[in-house]
Length: 317
Ligand SMILES: C[S@@+](CC[C@H](N)C(=O)[O-])C[C@H]1O[C@@H](n2cnc3c(N)ncnc32)[C@H](O)[C@@H]1O
Image (cartoon, rainbow, N blue to C red; front, side):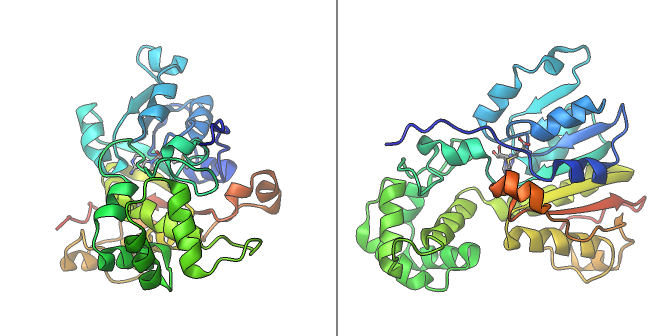
């Protein structure tokens, strides 16, 4: 098993996120995805106070060493929780309104590069993939779920056109316990030729990771949370890494701005007629060529940003 050390996470679209948030000294900002703290560091350096979330205990443990957590009052408050719990966690800290919310969703380089976390098929590790290092793992899913459910997950979250074939191969190969075993099963099912430009296991790994961590539900709920906690004039900046996520962010903002009818299942039908809660929607902002050259992991990133209006929150169903 590889003992490859985690490479430091390089923040993606950082300058663009800072600009989108129009940071002012004294602002109260939520960093929903602390990770290696690349965004949070920049927010603190700009004079903001930051409430940062991460469901990964390793990320939070590293943040605890930051001096800003020991200032009085602290300028950095860490929440070892899911970002879907943002509203409740802030309320517990006595906060009902913030100036900005930043989200940089997906996995960090530390998570991807550490074989023991089981996210990568390039290094062999236990089939885990849990961001929070708790709860049902990828191994639990591939070894216990019905073949039809596996196929459904691969199709929906990996856009794997041969999802049934892959699911059948997974079920036939059970039990699977390592990322290497799973990758081999997927490659064999899809007739992988070494040297092909894209490893076909990519789609299945993405799908299983999204499922195990409930990532799309988390995102939908966090967007609703941001709508609730942002003050009028407050700013939202969301960086996502694949089309399934970007579609959710784009749709949420267009609905919130009143441009399209509701599709978010956390909102009642009646909400589609309510006043716009977000305005000044940005276009999709992508990394410059210079950034993708410097940091190839930025390649698929998309930033969307918007400004909260004074309209009341659309009520959840
Ligand atoms: C791409 S990294 C963020 C990197 C960070 N912006 C930086 O500059 O270092 C994403 C982080 O979000 C965390 N994360 C993903 N989904 C989460 C969720 N639903 N709740 C809380 N944290 C989550 C992951 O554990 C990971 O550490």
